[in-house]
Length: 148
Image (cartoon, rainbow, N blue to C red; front, side, top):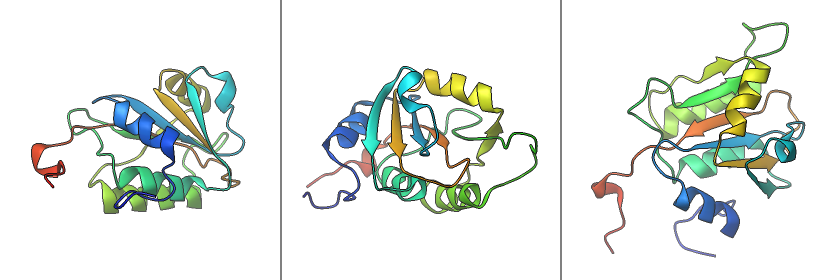
């Protein structure tokens, strides 16, 4: 255990978000997502839902403010206007922890293509459908760095 580090962030995930650079993407994926077949390194988060994992990551990782969009979710197949409850929870978390970043919707196969280019995929056991989000890492400013 470490002080000040969210307990859901194990060593592999801490390493991942620490080594990611500005503009790198991380996918937080639900239990149905094809995590292991897309290419990026997969970090297992069994027993954890996607919302809790997103919260843990956003407590330590800023979103990118230098691009128009820094967060995406998968569009509901056959109903592009639908916003599943899990996605409402994602948006509330982003608003609370990262600021005014609208989560953009992306068609299913385009979302998979974006995930192929991510630095990491965190495979959760989120059982709610469409419980997937991609986050683009931003810059950590000097005043946010630990100064012990």
